[in-house]
Length: 398
Image (cartoon, rainbow, N blue to C red; front, side):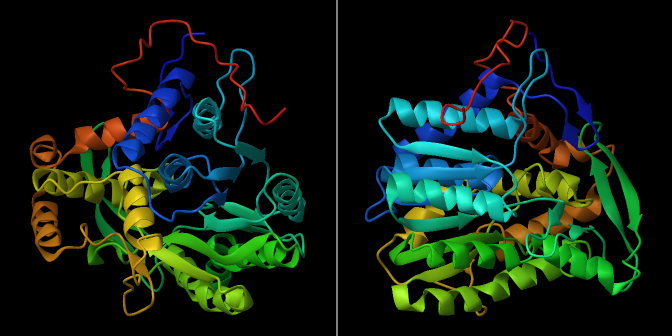
């Protein structure tokens, strides 16, 4: 079939298998260009492995360290005449390239919050790898069914305490407007968001993996967070999502105690603001990112997901040196984004931004391009007017 992008708001409803393959190849080429990561991981589990930082982590481990990888995700495969999700095609492309390079790569498609998928993953580790030395937790979901209670939780994206009004942009049209988001009106919404996006499921995974005996001596685990600039604090870090991130970051202490007898350790890495399926849904953030891209590209310090993950692995997790942490014990690979000169220039542009000048003072075009790249579109190497086979399988999922 011929597949073109179809969008609804911040969602792209279609994805292109050849374009996503090109996207994965580009990321693999970047990791290879940086050379091998000395003393890198060899047997890796990535939970939330199909998009964004998750797939970039899997690529970095495999092609930067020759690691065997198991990826867990919840994606929709293609049906005849209906494309699969971008994450499905990403995973199919990753496995194809990994297997062609002689690397072990298998995937599990299902609800990573469930005990069933945890058990299935543990059984696969026992059967094929024995033990794993790195667990990457990069799960993003708007809802969660608690595996112990069966209670369904839905997260909300709201400020806390008072309404938040600021600029936002429709990145498809470039129209800048003001938006007001009302705060949560009860504590239940905050607790539900923590239940979905906090650290409990990461803890459950690590407890189950340890109990099953599949964590290697010296195992490491890392989860991902974000802080951002003060202008996004009301909707992000000081909002409901921020409370969930606080919970995730606090879980490090619990997991460190759990891993102590294995000489293992857990980290939270605070990553840079990037165009992902999740960040596109947050009001204010697309405008901030388009201005940030402009400034960072002008300074020659822009990074995408793959550059961030390669740097995290090579310069922090597996540098062979003591890892630099902030005052709250977090790895900060948002260091370039949060540089004083960068933030000062972004703040100045923010005050100026209007519909009329947006194309000139921001990199809104770069934002759009990155957004469509997520779904396999806007790659020069691909002829989107040609038929493509939408029925692409992830090799290891039968």
